[in-house]
Length: 79
Image 1: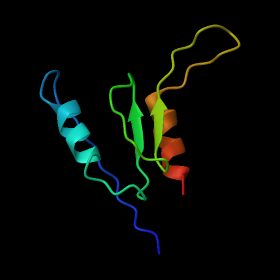
Image 2 (image 1 turned 30 degrees about the vertical axis):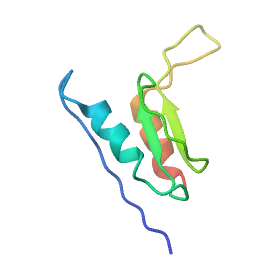
Image 3 (image 1 turned 90 degrees about the vertical axis):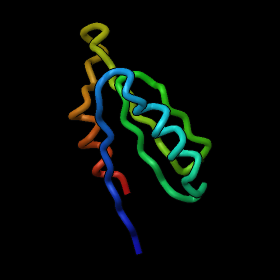
Image 4 (image 1 turned 180 degrees about the vertical axis):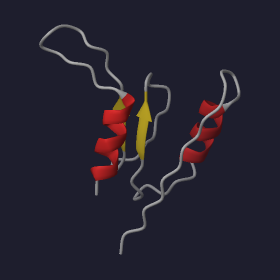
């Protein structure tokens, strides 16, 4: 049986979001899957079942932008 839980952490600059999330990530069992969506990679998790998705700006005509909306849609499709 699958248990899906979606959480969103938001706050102003310097409010401690990254520190809070990093401490929570240390408490997650290694077999749990975590999907992290960021615009700049700041969080790390030592878990082989987890995925980190990063926003990407458009570099040129061949490499298109990947925005947060697209990453969220992709994450919701993961199993």
